Length: 234
Image 1 (cartoon, rainbow, N blue to C red):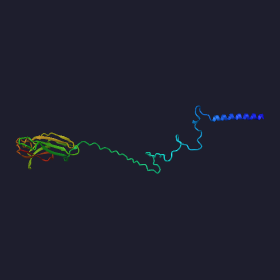
Image 2 (cartoon, rainbow, N blue to C red):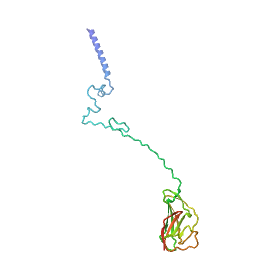
Image 3 (cartoon, one colour):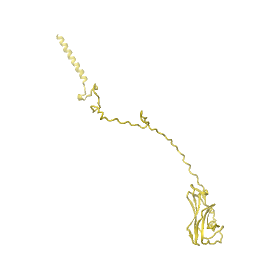
Image 4 (cartoon, helix red, strand yellow):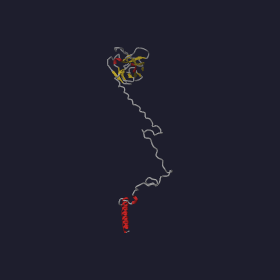
């Protein structure tokens, strides 16, 4: 009997020590950390999980709708959604600039305008009327024209048809060469003061004074002649 009690007491002591050892291993925690802050080793077997700081899900009336998805440029359209706009690439074409214009060419007659002006509409006999010959380029481009002295002339003519009374070529035969490059709208001008006397080719010494009356002055450049410009002598 005594032997049985000793065996039972020894088994009880060994079982208690083994239980304490296992329990102490399972319940160990870092020093200074309260037991309540230790996370559970396993999730709860029942109930629902909620985000941190929430004890329940919001009701359906307070739920906010998820943000709408926006399309990303260049991404394929979502199934069932509108087709993405197509991009058409237009090829660029380069044009070769026109070559620079060449040197000016001779002016044709149809772009040359010849005209004359008179210093004042009326002069007294004995005065020296002032005449100006105008040679203008009325074309769209610059051109070259020979306006040398033998080619140009200023004539005084009667109002009624008749031969010229005076010509600037008669007494000024110097063969002065004058080649001009005229820009569009540019003109060359030549002025002369008429002595009021007649003339003839070769400039004879016997010349007479032109009497009072109505006359006109005409400009010439080779085969071209301008419109008569009237003036009078009183």
